Length: 323
Picture 1 (cartoon, rainbow, N blue to C red):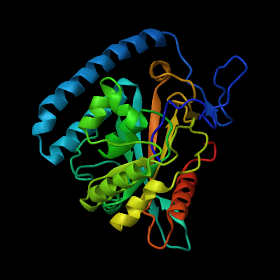
Picture 2: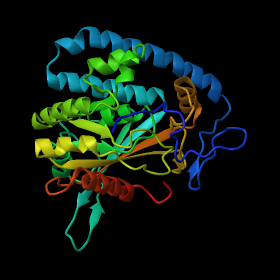
Picture 3: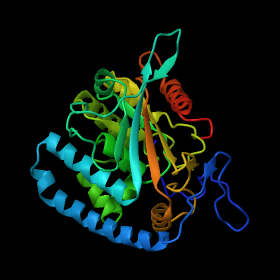
């Protein structure tokens, strides 16, 4: 239902060895380091701190004075720079619904001018794309409830690097130093866990955003995994799709190392602290964040539970079998 990356004991897929270190499931690789990686990590930490300060200054004036398209551009560019500092390349691909007899197909073409509103003619550093057609890319921006699997705190910036989005987060995040303020300023929707009345409030706000054509996203697992599996989805907030009369668009998140294997380096699970997670990410070899954007799933005629289960299965189908 909401992002809960630091919830202890909810790793559900992050196996532990006897000494407490993470063991990588079959098909994945751990973060790994190389000579000089520690020094490089500390340099990136310095750049990361400066980048956070730039974000604060941007939100204090330019963001507040900007029109919505400019605000989206500021968030998108800031997120892409953050990924670059973390040594991560963002790649986006679309699954395009084909004729029923042939199932689903995936098509690739180079990124080019005019593909997305607000994108530059050339892909910024750290962003590559695998795009089928202008029509498919434009269709991905049609009103819908975006739902993704959840691996890390950096998932938010990966999605924002593709398309700036309003996310749902637990209310406790609002009180986090700097990060909570940043999240609040860019329109994060905070929800109080266990309060049905607050869930109804968030559903109403989500539906309003969708109706206005603004992107909103859920991490429906309600917690993070190491990426080797997709946990069961909470169904409550899927009511927003029904309320808005809109479809659900599934998004599959996956991280790969330099050799193209799934990696759990960005994973923020179990007892991992934010500091430890950031350091593991910065010390890892160059990584690729893959976003696979699925075709919309009609919400009409489905219960919230059926819609949640259908969305989960669609995300699982878009991920390689190694997780």
